[in-house]
Length: 130
Image 1 (cartoon, rainbow, N blue to C red):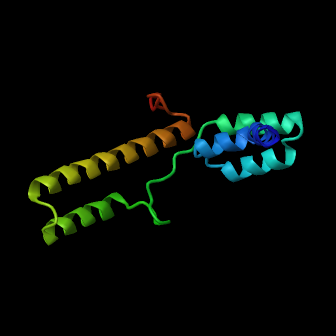
Image 2: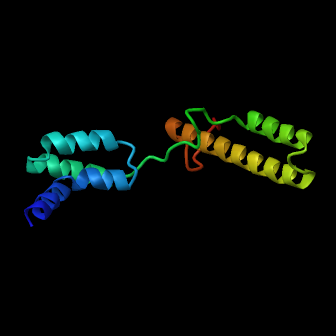
């Protein structure tokens, strides 16, 4: 009974850190440290709890520390697969269309972000009339 009570108290104390781990939060280490060092204060525990349920940044699709390929590199890789015979023409065309759509999405997002930073977003264009 005493062992179960101790386990329950630890689980309650580390609820913010456990939540961050379960949600795969991008700041799990910092949340754990805040929870560990300041969780005994009500403010520290509440702060860690709130932080653990805040938005999680999506991780990039890069694997093994590699960077994400540019659209040109992606198309070259797809073409190399076709030349090696690893994919047929239909698969090549489908992968090429997907890569081009992803590139267009990236360009559109960058353009929108740039317009927002310049204050010309949402279709509002500076007037050129005199």
